[in-house]
Length: 144
Image (cartoon, rainbow, N blue to C red):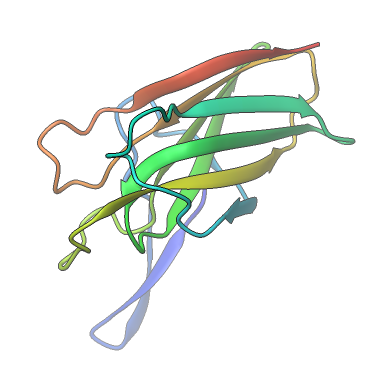
C-alpha cells in the first residue's frame, strides 16, 4: 500500500490513501505516468479506453482519455485476485480546497509487477467533491 506523508503541526505523519470500499488492500503503482491534458470531455466522439500487454517483467497498462479536472494530478492503485488485475486511477488529493473550473482528458501509463495471463480491468474515480464518487468502469482487456 502506498503511504502518503504529510506535515501536521511540524510533525511528519504517515497517512493511508483515501481508497473506496473494497480497495483498502490495494497496492500503489510506483511506475505511473500522467500525460498533459489532451482534450475536453465536452467534445463529442471521445471514449475512455484501456490497453494492456505483457511488459517484461509484469504488465503495462495504458488508460486513454480518462476524465478528470484540469491541472489535477492522479495516481494509480492495483489489486489482484487470481488472474484478475484491477487498476484504479484517482486524484492524488481527494479533498481539494480549490479546483480548476474545467475538465480534461488524460492518458496514464502504469507498470504492474503481475505476470500474464491476466484480465486487466481499469476504473477511474473523481475526487470527494463529487456527490457520486464510486469507481467508474473504463474497460477490461485480456493479456495472454
